[in-house]
Length: 225
Image (cartoon, rainbow, N blue to C red):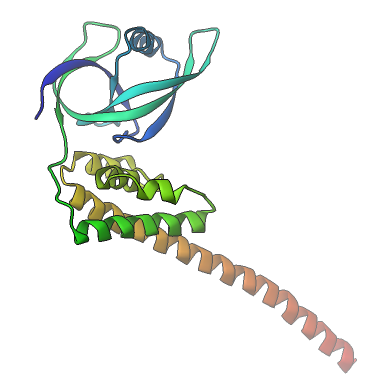
């Protein structure tokens, strides 16, 4: 663990990962105040995954990189980027919004190796394959120039993963393990999309076949008559 500090806390039903981009619509009064203070003081705030059961103890700081739109009633559309991961030590409720004393954590050091490079390449190839299936486009040249840890978070941040899955990736402290686990999960997503495409082709093919068969049957009936 690194040094402790106190930060504003924003519980959400989503998970933010380091270096990843997250747009937010700020509409609750307490968070209008919080974001306003963060902008004035150039401070980061912490995003933690919260569902109906609990607030998770591990989260990620968010840096406001751009205010996209301000509304007359004080609402805001902002763009944030994930920073450092943290674990909550204590929560304070002295302000309209929550604050937490947190301790930061990071991945352990990873030595460069052929295995690590292979894991990175495998992950990027899976991203390309999934983007091809879903019709998305990414700058893979820029992605390949990122460090392995950032690429591991990029894989783990995929829209097809649930918040619970992303929370597990966030808590991992091994880049290598995150690459392995996220690539394995992505491979399942790719396989699912492939199956769905096959089913669509079969259904579409049967529909066309049915029309052609009906047409041939009608011709034969006409000839018989």
